[in-house]
Amino acid sequence: MTRPLVITDCDEVLMHMVVPFAQWVDEAHGVLFRMEDASFAGALKRKECGTPLEAAEVWPLLDGFFRTEMARQYPIRGAMAAMTAIGAAADIVVLTNVGPAHQAARGAQLSALGLCAPVIGSRGGKGEPVRRLLDERKPSVAVFIDDLAGHHASVAAAAPEVWRLHMVGEPAIAGKIAPAPHAHARIDDWGAAQDWILARLSQNIPAAGSEQV
Image: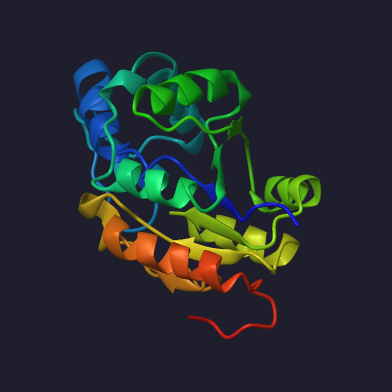
């Protein structure tokens, strides 16, 4: 058997994103970001008139942010120390939906902070990429961390043996997002999350057929 595997998202798990993104769209595009519920797209409104942006306008803004403004991002408190501790017990892969075009920049961003781990810039649901990682690496146990409930549902369907931790590390939006129903736990603090992850790795029991903890 190979080492345990931890597959983690980046934005709002390892790095703050919505706060620097909100500052940038305000300064550069005259757009206000005010997240009132779990809808990211619905939080973007034009400053002049308060009209919500169309869905087709959202990705170009995100793409522009990741293309030129990633230097504005900064680590979630405790995330890098937790990755160091977890990396002593497991392999780490960063699975982030920035897309292939921004994969190298994301890897450089994290490497500069001391996290030298493979980065996969995916798009869409994360179930299939997680399934591929499991089939390639055959870990004895695996943990998946993400802030979006949809990805937990995707991973639960494609790889039910993976432990799933729902984490929203950005305090500005954490209280507006309900716990993901397909996650085994919801923890927004890295101190407690590290303990939970290391416990799953130590037990070395796949999630499927195990009691939720």
